[in-house]
Image 1 (cartoon, rainbow, N blue to C red):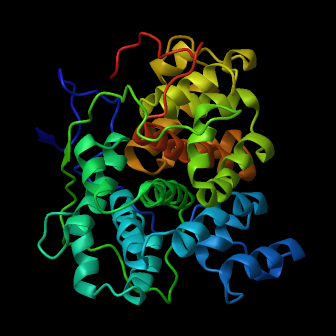
Image 2: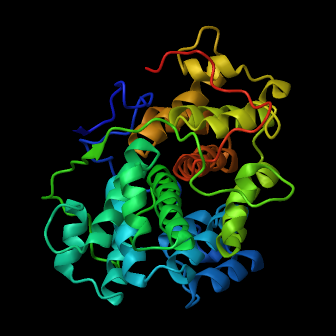
Length: 392
């Protein structure tokens, strides 16, 4: 059975509050966070622009991130890898990026990458077809499967066996990982740029097609994998690290994204672990949940009640702060953007750096959760599974 939104059945696994598959996320018409003007750049800012802009000119995306230079250091290395260095062809990269921008309703990424897609050989008609998904004629079988991969990761936070096997006929293991991580990371960027209100640059005239109905058709989500699709390498460390070690060229820049959250971000461990646990719950990524309840995040040590996190923003006795953080995650997950009401609450409680970090954190761990589900990373001895809380 195929559905707009996954539904629970004997052969399917439900998701709580799944992403909208019938209504495109809202795009803000003005920034919530102003791009940092060049008059305020320090030497640190100029070095980052030189490193990541190519021509010494920063677009609105980079200039917005420059408000927190450490966030640039967290996001841009992996962005550069996926757009310029991965093993995928430039055409395949742009198909995945454009489809992800469409799914998330991100005008800025669509505008930037429509131009890059033409450089990669896509025609204007093909760029428009990306918005229509995998069904229109003109895609070859591998391209159809790539577009379906993006849809499934966005809506289901996982990939069906059929799609995984079909793609495996065209791509080796590292290319499969490159494809999954392209969708996942550009989902991160989309949620961040949507919520920060990053606007398309004036010199990128392409915009999301307004006459293409927003309709995502995906198979129901299959039950969580009981065996790994990618076997972790032998050696020290937890299974997720040893899984990504299978593709070291990808793992190194990807690690920079999480490094910001766990070592640089000013959020308290309590706030950080609520954000991470809730997105793991929303994505039904049990490995992510287990590690942040237990050995990695040690959520309880920071005053976090995992059962209350699973119960969500309306959990009994949830503090105002905890409810706001849980609502932040749920809105990002379902709508790929924070509502005006929640943005106001977030920026009332936090300064700019913390507010930007509170959006960055669940966005990044949504990508991690999608990867864990797609690769089938398995629980390890002693890991704690989800609490018995109904999905709703």
